[in-house]
Amino acid sequence: MTISSALNAGVAGLNANANRLATISDNIANSGTYGYKRVTTDFEALVMTGQQNASSYSAGGVRSSSSRLIAERGALVSTSSALDLAVSGRGMLPVAPQADADAISAESLQLTTTASFSPDRDGYLKTDSGLVLMGWPAAADGTISATSRDTVSGLQPVVIRTNDLAGDPTTAVKLGVNLPATGTEAEATGEALPLTVEYYGNLGTTESLQFTFTPTVPADGSSNSWRMVVTDSASDGAVVGEYDLVFDATRDGGGALASVTVVAGGAYDAATGAITLDLGGGPLEMEIGTPGGESLLTQIGDSFSPTAVGKAGSPVGTLTGVEVNEAGLVVATYDTGFTRTLFQVPLVDVPNPDGLTPLDNQAYGVSPDSGAFFLWDAGEGPTGNIAGYAREGSTTDVAAELTSLIQTQRAYSSNAKVIQTVDEMLQETTNIKR
Image (cartoon, helix red, strand yellow):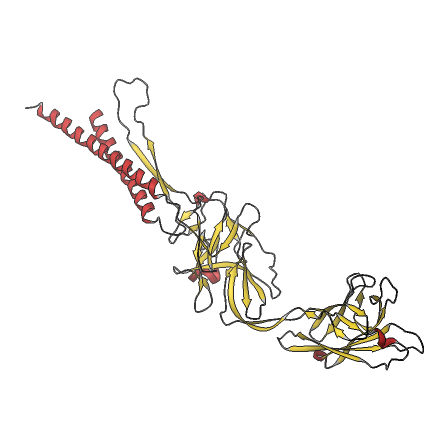
């Protein structure tokens, strides 16, 4: 029995070291594979004789077990593509096979720490192996709706329309104009002063606000007051606001806006210095300054000139690029300079990443050993950030694997020698009959 157990132990040693050799071979073969997680093989002794100082000993042999170190992270490698993504820190990107992306379930959800995405002919961001990036779609204003974080019900395939057109309607205007102080003197002509400010409508069309500044001419002295009338081309030229403006004539605040009185139209907020105009396409905030504070409308000298006229928004533009920022927001950039958030890619975290089920193409599936998943905003909770223009390198240390290879080779040869020795001993035992 003792000799037979030695033979069995030698065979078990050969099998265990063969398994270790297989993992070393896999690690070395994938030393250049982005996102590869190295595999380790551990040995466990099997004990057949449980008593101390037994008169005979039966070798139990050895058993091997392999595990993939999914939680271990490789170094980030810079690339030239904005859609090369890697996770810096804890968490994984949600992906799904293209066949399941439109009807994703908890079973079809896959996770990866890095991938290179590009739009296919339908605009889906996917890898060469067919894994589609998943995210939460943004509303037209770029906001992300609240959704359940422990289910995949809100996730959708990230789609980029390469020929997409988009405009940014104007929602705010800054009106900085200097009115001539001589216009409100008794000898002035009372001529109205016109000004046109263009803005962008909801459909990317160019609309305009027409301003008319009419001075109040007194019988003597100076009134320092004007009436501002605003009309809107998108409202068929209708008057959308009428306001009486009075300017400060004192030495300390001369020329600054002193008061604003609403005659008709949107309200004026003295605290923010903005007028809310109700235009044909919706409300617009027009900043003119605060009385006694920072004033955009002034009355100095004898010239009429715009000083700081500006507007938000942009005309219709064509999509030129897409990037994913650290927070996981998929941001599209248009040739007009306008940017818009299209999706938010969450990071998926599980209690035990090493318990995930390994799949092809450096992807993993949720398992009972990994625990339930949770979808985090990148950078929130325990998760790290998403890095664009980057890939995660393999966690294989080639030098360490080559060292393990030598050790495994020696161990395998030694176990083979044990089997050879046992064979010779059995042969000697057989020769006793002769």
